[in-house]
Image 1 (cartoon, rainbow, N blue to C red):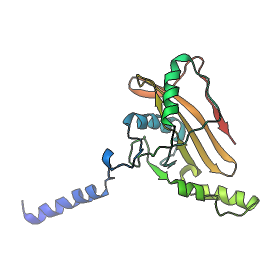
Image 2 (image 1 turned 90 degrees about the horizontal axis):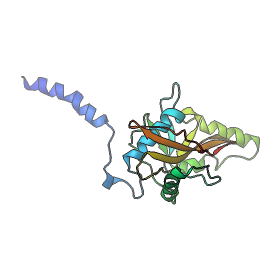
Image 3 (image 1 turned 60 degrees about the horizontal axis):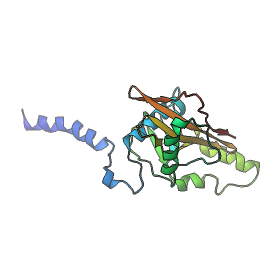
Image 4 (image 1 turned 60 degrees about the vertical axis):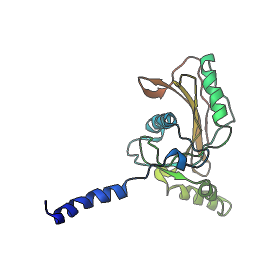
Length: 200
């Protein structure tokens, strides 16, 4: 094969390698980063069921986990181990990976950017309108947040919390319970299992 032809054929491969997202090894991740693949499989199930929807191509996700402590869900005894692990995993905020697979593309939003959304806005109705307008620049007009995930010892029960922010007086979320069936995470439907939900 002529040398010139070989060079032409190598260019698309080189461009593909350069454009591929860089996957970080565990050693390259910041301390405290969630690196458990099963956690991201749970997030993927949530993204498919809750965050995703018709036409959703991307979501904005807070870079640090957030836990919601204002209510405790109703729990049958066989879910208490997963709940206790959930509480332990959420003792401190955790960093999310930027290159994980959760079923659809996502962008991580820094705490600094999130906090600045309402930081320099005027008071009154103008501030409310400006804050709501600021969220329109994000996919779906909202920023999502997730807690760390708690598992039972068999890793077939998962407990976590999610929330979203979409402007002035626009926030909501819920606790989430999932079970692993046939290798897939699906919402739990257990007797005596009650979720916490909040919205404003």
